[in-house]
Length: 126
Image (cartoon, rainbow, N blue to C red):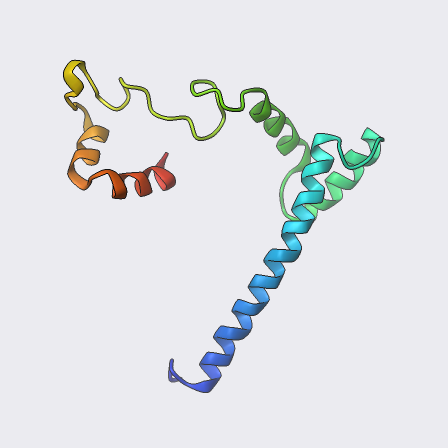
C-alpha cells in the first residue's frame, strides 16, 4: 500500500476526525465525572458518587481512588513544596550551591542541553 494513496489519505483523515470528535465528547464526560468527584453535580452526595462511578468506569478511571487523590491535590494547590503536581525541584535537588555553581547529574543535563530542551525534558520526566 502506497502511503501517499487516496485510500491512505482517507484513512488518515477519517481516524483523525474520529479522534477529534471523540476527544470533544469524552472531555464533556470527564467534566461531569470531575464535578461528581467534587460533589458539585448534584445536591445528593449519594447520587454524585453513583453517577461519578458510572462516568469514571466509562473513562477507565477508578472513581473513589481518583476522588481521594484529587481532594488531596486540592488541599495543597499552589504549595510549592507540598503540592501534588508541578512541584519545582529544590536548590539542593538541582545541585545548586553557593555562587550558583551547578553540581549533580540533573544539573549537568540542564547545563549540557540548555533551558528550552531541559524544560521539555522536565515535562515528561519530572
